[in-house]
Length: 509
Image (tube, rainbow, N blue to C red; front, side):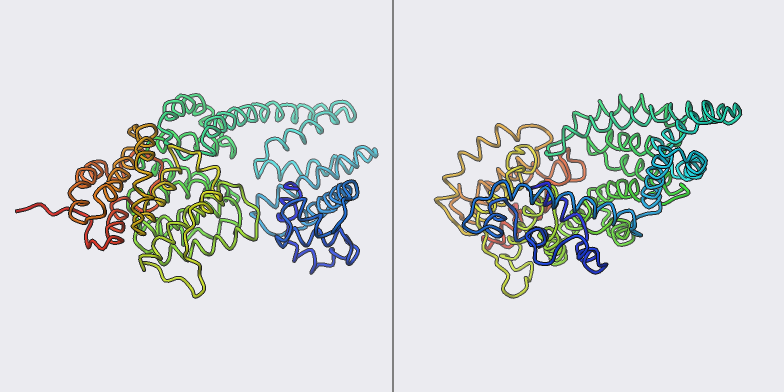
């Protein structure tokens, strides 16, 4: 069912219906049409829900399985028709679709012995493929042209031309594949974790040393994308944001000079650059980039959601809490109508919890009828992946639970959890990468330990706040997503929830 849901929600149903394609694909009122509509509208998310909708009171397992399979085939055909007629996307994306369509046509013509027209089509495609740097497709085209000019036409001059070109691009493809494999290997360990990536820095450095000579040899799009992402990882994995920003700016300059739109790499490097500006507290620069380059991110795409995360964090770090809330609400609405990886949806559930905390402190004015009740069990059920990320996103998950307990002055519940939280800190938050989080959580634990008495709280917590301030956010080794609100700000908010005007102890003169 999940494959079918992902497939259906990936296409523009409104476009299918308005273009007349819908009536061609489905018989009006049929079970197949009902199932497709229900999945797209989010009314059906499981096989059980589909069975109850289509076959109430029955158990038609074989009929239902066949219906799903036929629907999948229909929608795959729709994807083919829509994407190859689509005018959306960058020039490079449209060229890729066009080249693959022509490649398929050339192979069909070749199989029907229409060699003249197929070779002419291949030579026309080759120019486009070379321009947009589609290395794999270029090799397939060159292989066919080499074969035909060498074995059928006997044109030695053209055979040698395409043979040499094939050898050249074969080497480029090997370099591209080496870079992509190296980058994928490095990233694969951190897809579902926000723990510090410091250990990967040395490995990225060694890997880049192997890839860099290839990058000097070729300006290949794919080679430089993967190679420069590895170069970013050398510095970003140890939170050297100043060096990361320099690498990103250099990469942006490289891809901007390409003779075609390079939206994918520009998205990647602008994203990293905004992260740097947030951590370096150059907020105006970060906001300017988000505003200026939002248009290169396709709304609803994975990268678009990641950009909104940065927008949210930027607003949180600068205390523009109302704007952060508006971004959060906009994204949550988008998530309800789409199909995104679980880590995207879970991240925004965590952000929503922090927004609710700020609403409770009157820092955010929600719309009427907005539910502000924070339910811990419901919240934890919605974030199963990150709840297991003990040195990563489970940290802000734990912190928001403590903050709500403190706000409610739930003495028994908070005290009951102190021992478990202290064990958690000693087990998972003892590394340099989690130093700030450890200090902040220990400071929070002084609140119930002091029975919520303001003066005692400030006295007991001060040493942890002082320790926290020895490692400012911009030089901390932790990953940037951990502090959804900088701990210095969050401490003042926690104190405000207790009715304490300022969350710092005042030394006696």
